[in-house]
Image 1 (cartoon, helix red, strand yellow):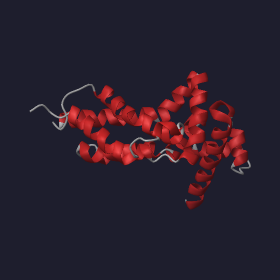
Image 2 (cartoon, rainbow, N blue to C red):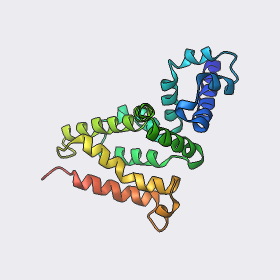
Image 3 (spheres, rainbow, N blue to C red):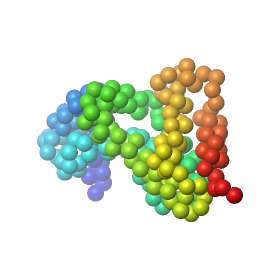
Image 4 (cartoon, rainbow, N blue to C red):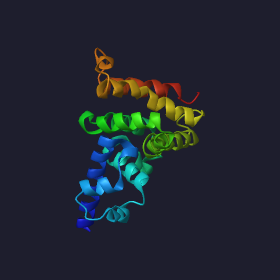
Length: 200
């Protein structure tokens, strides 16, 4: 079992390097197998059904926000004051050296190829938005938030953190003179919750 987990980890590590270096379209199962030191590319299919599934797993293994929503089902009934900051902190947990190159390549690829954009969305942002939508709908049912379009609520919540993260990962001038991640998080979550507070 441990050997299987090690091999799976080796494949994910090699796939991360290949996707970062070659983009989604340029990376091949054969190249990933070679980088992982596998004798046969067929072994990858023992762990992952196809390249798209492998890409999704790579993104989940490297993106804290995707891992966070994958593990948050037990939290769906907890109050938003506890859950929303946790999601925002996971969003900020991207490591520039680790995820930056992959995001740059994937975004560039997604702009050129619609099929890559779809894979990227399904593996990352789509999963986060879907969890948030369901979470916000549940909080409305519980009376903790006022009724609203949870799809827009989910997008609004994530959108509040995009510039802060972009400043740290790609555009340092955006971060200069601005609030720290924690300061921004507290302010943004507070604004969001006050805006959706149930009417008295």
